[in-house]
Figure 1 (cartoon, protein in one colour):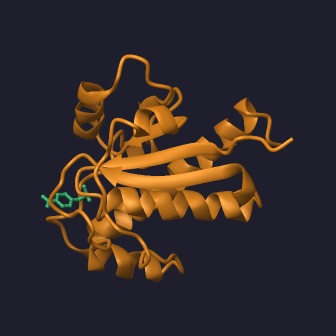
Figure 2: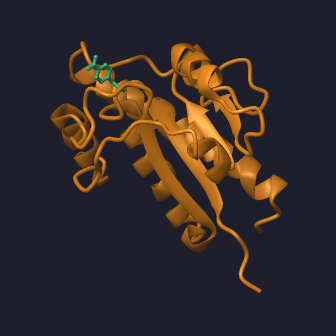
Figure 3: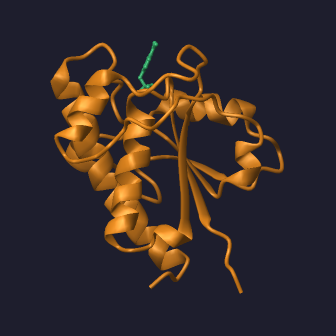
Length: 167
Ligand code: 4NP
């Protein structure tokens, strides 16, 4: 019997820096564990400015240095259906989380959570509770995003593997 994939949506403001990075990093962690067939991973933004655009070129360049390919992605906005279609929605920062909670339907299937602290951590790597917006920062901001989302992706995947008894 075919099982339903576990559907994970990464969300930030523009869907051109943090959440596409988180999408590809998380997918990479899933594929390192050969669990691709069990997951469906996507990303979206709470804002509408960048719909249809590729990820920011600084995000693409920083990811490419770690052999991660952000080129094929295209920005989109979060939709009401996402709360029914996904199992987990991860917000990159507290504003993204409150923007999501403001549009979350009452009968949502998805569990909508802060990415760096889910399920029950006080803080993520280096004391960060949120992934800082790198849009107005230099290259180091994009490196930090990658470091934070790599650490969180490993922890989240460990937890999901455990909860869903995937191994
Ligand atoms: P992201 O970064 O939310 O990580 O994709 C941003 C991208 C664009 C803007 C802000 C943040 N913007 O204001 O256009």
